[in-house]
Structure formats: C-alpha cells, structure tokens
Length: 189
Image (cartoon, rainbow, N blue to C red; front, side, top):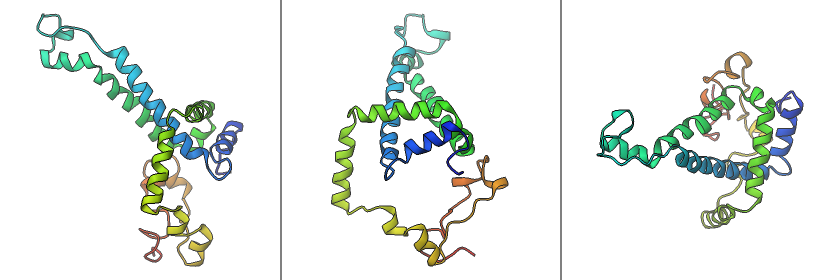
C-alpha cells in the first residue's frame, strides 16, 4: 500500500527495491549521470557566441554579463532548477502521486540502464574503498532494525495523513521520524 496504488506505482517500487535494494544506489548513480548530461546538453544549446565589446550584446547587456552568457552557465542553472530540484520537491510533497506516474517508471529504467552501461563504475570502486577504509556498515548496525528499535522503545513515528503527506511540512520536513533525534537518546515524549 505504501508502494503506490497503481500499476506503475507497484512496478516502480518493485524495480527500485528489487533484491536487497541494489537498484536504489544504481538509480542514484544513473540519475546523477542523467543530470550531468543534461547540464552539458543545455549549456551547449544555450551558450552564445557573441563577441563582447562589438555592440552586439544580447538585450544590450554589459560586456561582462555577455561573457558569462557565452559560456552557457545560465543553461546549467536552469537545468538545476527545472530538471533536478523541481522534481525532488514534487516527489517529496506528493510521493504516491509521483510513484504512480508512468514517467517516473520510464526515467527509473533509463537511469538504471545508464548505470548498467558501466559509465560510472568508478563510483562503485570509490564506494568500496571508502567502506573498507572507514569501516562503514549498513544503517541497521548503527540504528538497529525496525524490530530492535521497537523493542528498545525507539519505534518509528507514525505519519499523520492530513499533516504529513502532500505538504512540505510533512515527511522529511517534519523532523526526525526515527524514535529520537539520533535514534539512540531515548524516545521523544
């Protein structure tokens, strides 16, 4: 029920959390690769080639601003806002509606395909090096499994439907949903 209410919602969650959740980090790498490719694509499209100081500046702006626009950085800023941050805010405010959207499933498959190609395999090598060097373990080692947290009176908080779902004040914005501020201090009263 938490994994979506439609065909695509269930398919998206089944694919994302397949196995031991191995597709989730793969999706994150593929998503980041997609965003980076979008940056370069939009920057190349929106970059200008106007020589500053010739009086041909776009909208009559100053030469320094024209030099900036020639690089295409404004396209990267637009991509950051539209292609990255807007989707994250929409997904956090309306998670079920976002999961049920067929476009989400298609983008998930595309991101997993990019990760599967191995273009970013170096990220896995770096992750293993950091894991070994720093002794990083799964979250359950640090905060316990849900069953262990319940037994220690650190159970996850219940989300209130009217206050949490669909509002930026809910979910991750409402504070900590695990028993206490660091999940080890004792329960929040």
